[in-house]
Length: 172
Image 1 (cartoon, rainbow, N blue to C red):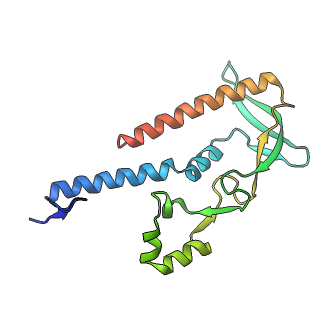
Image 2 (tube, rainbow, N blue to C red):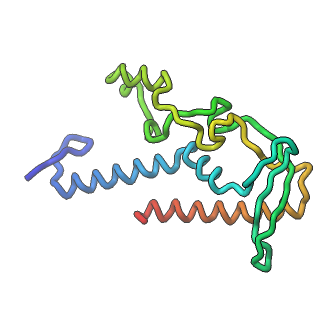
Image 3 (cartoon, rainbow, N blue to C red):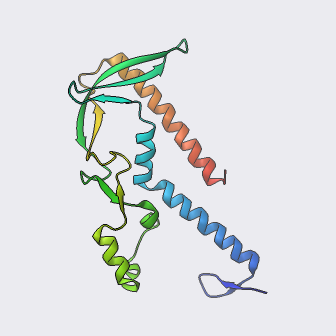
């Protein structure tokens, strides 16, 4: 019988080794999809702001009204430094370090440490797309009724993302 070892060194049979592998895969997926950079990318993909007019400092978004008709809205925007990359335009690929790295990872492979710290594993920021800034609705200047619609949509989108994450955690 093929055996593996659990964390305290005892023999584990094939079934136990497979369970450990499944558990590790679950934790890897949970770490990856829970990573702030990945979540920021999902938020950016689901953003209501479809077209940002930098010259007019406005954004356009579409929502269904109560009658089910698509309606276009314009909102004032302002820019802020991207919170995900902190204005760098890039960040480390979460596939590399979402599960965490320790000093031992760098000690065991000095070339990895050099590459990691040197930016070899960097990717274009998932939130700002390399722009280093993100457009956000200027809530002080926006129409209150439109903000109410946006907030309602954002709450529904957050609930949906939570549901998807829960399904993923259950193996869906």
